[in-house]
Image (tube, rainbow, N blue to C red):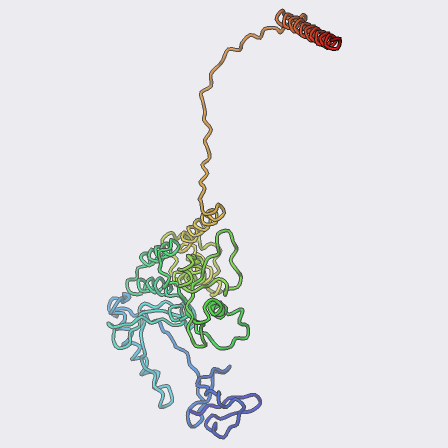
Amino acid sequence: MSTTYADGDMVVNMTDRDSYSHPLRDTYKVVYDLTTENHHFQAGPEGLIVHNTDSLFVEFNPRNPQTGERLEGREARQATIDITGEAGHFITKALAAPHDFEFDKAFDPLLMFSKKRYAGNMYEENADDYVHKYMGIALKRRDNAPIVKTIFGGAMRMLLDKRDVNGAFRFVKEKCMELVDGKVSLGQLTVTKSLRADYADPARIAHKALADRITLRDPGNAPAAGDRIGYIYIAAKGGQEASKLQGERIETPQFIKENELVPDYRHYIEHQLQNPISQAFGLLVEYVPGFDAGLLRGCPTAEDLDGYLAFREGVAARLLFGESLKRFEKASTRSAMTSMFNGKAVITVMARPVRHKSVEIEKPQIQPTGTQRVMSNYMYDSMVVSNINKKQRSERAAKKKEEEKASEMVSEKK
């Protein structure tokens, strides 16, 4: 392959690369695909200038020539293939040889999310045999957790194979409820990414930060460049705020099991499931259970296509994930309260006020209070007796003292 491209201030032809000297020659890689502003690039041994092309989708909507009714199902697919083949022959006549415009494939149904992003049942050979074709959507990405393929893929099969919007809607809601209830295996939540040798900012690369922690915990099993690191997003402990650095919010499945950590189910709904699934259902939002025309009040017109699609996706997201996110919030609140009380859940029940039937009570007559102006007999007698006893004790003590003094005098005379 001969590919000419700019290398700094030089123009290099890769056909003559053996005679080209470069300081990084040992690590030089051949560029095999280019996209330019005018969509032209050089390719082929003769240095041909070719044009980069995009797919062209044509909606024929064939009708019965006798009745004028629109065809459906297999009849519509077969008619579309026939019409496309016939149109190809006419267009080829207008093209310079050796160009040939011919039938490629037909889709039934087709969900077009945006340019180069679509999903549908693809028919190539005939109107009966098809395969699922996904282009540019989450089901083609490797950096998503398997649960995306489980839920999104399951919903797409229902939409494409059964044309069952209600069934696909219920499937998504049920699976999300199972997710927030912790009924999903850790394997379904594990994301894997390849570890490189060097990063410009390692602290901002989540799986690199995790690899460094693994190295500190277990140097004997330190991950090496080229290894794929499997990790799961974990929830912050009850009452704590989640770290802003993703590297501190992920852990290995083994570490999670050993330390009884809890996955961050909300992250999987909001950052892996919600966007792709809402985009699909946003195209069909009028057929989603719970839809009301008032939900589209304020939606931009199709002339503002990006705003139009984004608004519909938001409506679909609320219908699909609102309930499961509320359940997650309640569970998180209970977990935080449990943590605050040292693992013991405290349930407070407010007592209801007891209401009794009112009863009229006769007001008692209040007797006038008299003022005691003289001491009562009991108090007077007690005071008199106390004084008498005190006087008698005093007299006995004095008499005893005199007797002791007289006794001492007699003893001295002898």
